Length: 123
Image 1 (cartoon, helix red, strand yellow):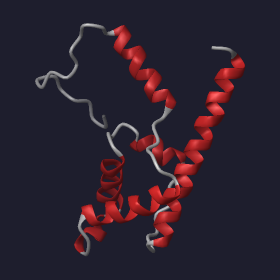
Image 2 (spheres, helix red, strand yellow):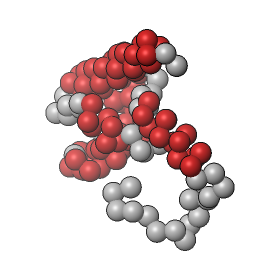
Image 3 (tube, one colour):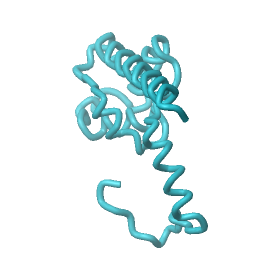
C-alpha cells in the first residue's frame, strides 16, 4: 500500500470516528444524559463486541444509577436509535483489525479460546 493510500485510509477512518463520536454525543444530549465521549472512550470500549454491548458496559460501569429507573435495553435502544439516525453503522478501530490479523498469523494453529485458559485482568 502506498503512503498516499495509507494516509487516505487513515483520514477516512478519522472522519468515521469523528462522525460516530458526534452522533453518540448528540444522542446523549437529546436524551438529557450527561455523557460525553471522546476517542479514548471509544478505543477503551473497542474490545467489546457490538455497539449495544459497548454502550451497556459503559452505562453499567459509569452510570449504574440510571438502571434504577430504566432498563439497560431501553437506554441502549433509545441512544442507538438517535445515534444511528445521524451516523448509521458501527465504528471499529483500524488498528484493532490489523492487530487481530497479525496475532492470528503469529499464532496460527493455537486455540486461545479454550475455556480453561485464565483471562487477564482488564482484558
